[in-house]
Image (tube, rainbow, N blue to C red):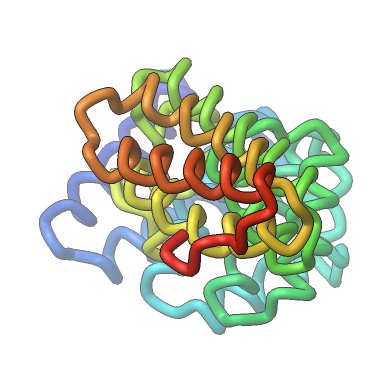
Length: 250
């Protein structure tokens, strides 16, 4: 058996262990595999193993996962070599993961800094853009919020509504479940519509929100809530044009 075949065999064994509830055994196996191979194996193999190890660690202990990832990004001690081996695309992945961890811990400022850095390094991925969109809306940036929401919806649609096919290094790809509980689908897009609409009201931008709702209806044509939202938006847009006060129901 070649070294690569052996690595793949151990990697899949860890996946089976984790699926059967042997979490610590799987974590230990992946950690050992990463430590053994992160300098001697190819960069791609090393990062794949690290990603699986980090995913399980994040599910079991966000604090430990955050500490590890911070040390990797800062190139502390033995992690310097691993960081220096990474491509710009892999750096973007690590910033994305850090942003998600910080967001799960309610550190919105730190999350935005890391997610925006990941995006600027070329990480174009549906969940990342959705989370950035939500943060832009929180900051009162309507145009940027809508831009990233549209991009997120496009990625999501192109990949057949499968979050874990969105990128090679997406948290949840190893176990099939996002370790921080993030998801991307109709419910997530519905959830952002209320704060988005409130922001649009204050900036007289309801037409842009209506256009986005029409895009959502295109993807989910049977969803009655979206059609109701479109109708309410249209009523408010017409009322505003006639000088009527905006409805409080939107």
